[in-house]
Image (cartoon, rainbow, N blue to C red; front, top):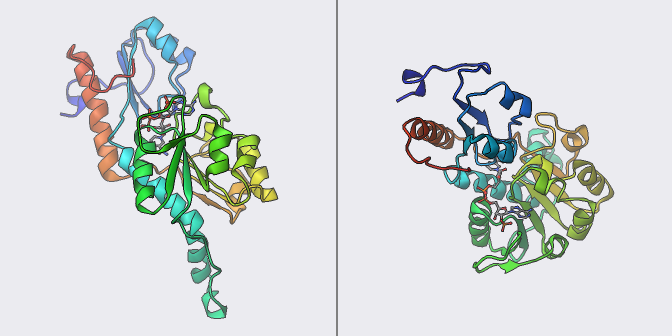
Length: 283
Ligand code: NAP
């Protein structure tokens, strides 16, 4: 049943608001929270809740929910697509034929996937789904995270160590202050001139200035990006670079997944207001 049939929906902050829905990554400021004195629950439309001040919510007894799992496969598909697009130069190949260049000669050779190594930064739900897909493409998987897991993939306890090993460094960890600019000039230098950076996590995890410099100097070969530091603004250097494949944050952007996310948002709110356990609680 649509929430609007059982609850009043407000578009602006007010003292009567008891539940709030925000997009994943939306910055919930302290001042917004202070304008909502009776807020009981925040339902994040997304798995990443890096925009929500969790400690403050806990202090105020505000519950937080998100939408894990239902978007995992779609986001992993986009990461895999970016690996294919960057290594096989698919966006460039498409431009080539549309520009009428094929009649003047063949498109240059690209790089195969088989036998290469994917280094996954953050082997969580999405990271594991990416590993599963890339294994089928013949890649070896290694990963970095804050702790080693019981999985069949190689664990690297240093991010530079993982970058050195990897042909594709794939970022799939959460955003927020704990991972800000985790991918910096040092990590990109370790990735090396044959390496490709893929980011489907959050723009904040990658130091975009360092990335642009590494692409310009050839310190890395390319990048595939679904997320950016200052969305929807994308630096002109990335837009203009043939070494980069860029997507407008479409990781979970399918009818099926967005519907499942919306249902989970509604189910969490309904559970809260019925005094039932939250379906997917963050805190
Ligand atoms: P998850 O299951 O919680 O996985 C996150 C992984 O990151 C965990 O394995 C965690 O492992 C690791 N991690 C946490 N902090 C880390 C750090 N400082 N350094 C390295 N690894 C770290 O989350 P998920 O469902 O896979 O989602 C991951 C992220 O994807 C979300 O937070 C969201 O920002 C992003 N996302 C993007 C899109 C898109 O449209 N592009 C869509 C959905 C999600 P340890 O705890 O062992 O470190």
